[in-house]
Length: 347
Image (cartoon, rainbow, N blue to C red; front, top):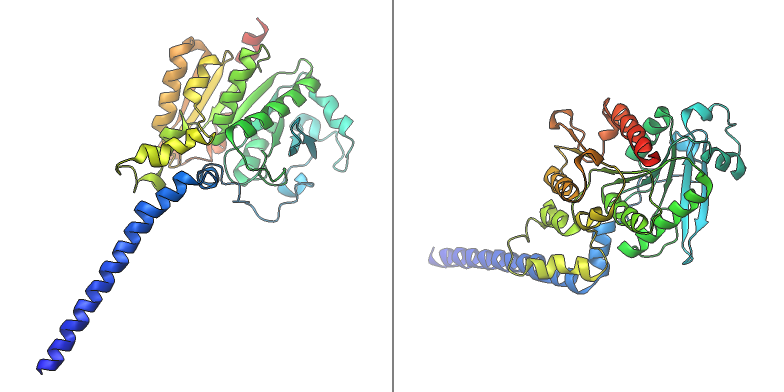
């Protein structure tokens, strides 16, 4: 009996020691090893911010946008001044779609429409996925029904664009190149720059640069934006286990600045001289609504209130981070904002 009890006590101690070792290993991995890898290897935070490896949906034929439900749309490629190839879609407004044969491939047919005076939405998507993301295609369809052109593209490192590691400087340069491409073909047609999620960081930076240089678009739309990437990362659910750690800023936030991923929209918005529309859902679990409020306050600090529009979508509608495009209010919001922006631009 006594040897049996001893064996049981020994087995219990061994199990307890094993559990302790496993717990220590988990702590070492999650609270020491992973943060240090994140801090010292720039590829890690870059992949976590941009998520270019998440190539959803699978099996997209970018050369055939009609297979994504976009008739009268053209796929093409441009090469930037630094040699990056960008995949692009141009989606015609609904009013013109019926007059263009589905098998038309002549670029001149599409490009000639850009200078017709119809507003052009230049769309910059968020991280992960591609220009063919389902919620993005939903938005394109809403915008074309309103009567606008949509031009959307994939940054470097995404989809069928060049497999170059993205950075803030790189994706802003890609957006800037596409804007210049559009400007050369748009004539007097209004260009409304639209960013979603991480794309709001891209467009805020890019449009601020354009405004400083005297080549502003007609307006800027920021859908589901953050004020700056450091606050976005600090508030992200993945950072919750590290937020109260000593050295959190040095370990997790400082690399974002050091490795060209600052995305300081609250700073750039001071130099945006065109009308701005900010839209955010209260139940956004990716980018908290409060960060859009902070961005709105930053905009009001630098610009007259009549040039800044802030639209809130209540949590009861469950639009979250991606589906403001499903709001019945959206067409009227966008149409009114674009019309007012055109009048302001032409004064």
